[in-house]
Image 1 (spheres, one colour):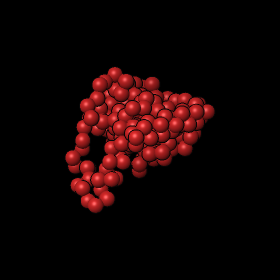
Image 2: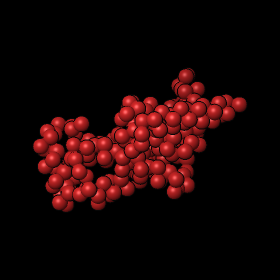
Image 3: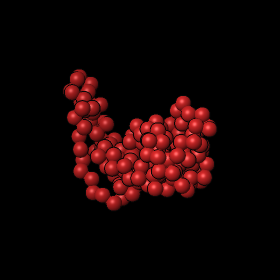
Image 4: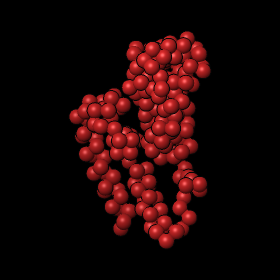
Length: 181
């Protein structure tokens, strides 16, 4: 996959320039992926603040190791892997505060409270899952990746993706349903 509006040769040129220390070229490479990276990291960490920190760590990690990227065409998937790994690390290493995003919270319309309560229960259930479960669920069902794409993004075999998905869905269902009682 080629980054938004960049030809293959342009992508090669930008990766080479970024590997030589050109921060502007690196910014051009990552900018199209930042929104998706933040969404994925937030899903995995369970917090927008931790998700932003994870993306920042992924940016630093990718910047430092850009010279090791063998195929510039693989940059988007390579960067996504940095984001996923950083988010899992953050989720495993940090105690999180539950934050409420006041800008996106429903304002109590007739059906809003019920929907908001369901979303809160689902977010709580997701928060109780292992970060790797949240990563595989997020890639497959939120980002819409195929099993093969999820396997590449997580650097695991397709069979492992299928197994993790099955177990993660079962765990999510169990935790979610426990919240109904």
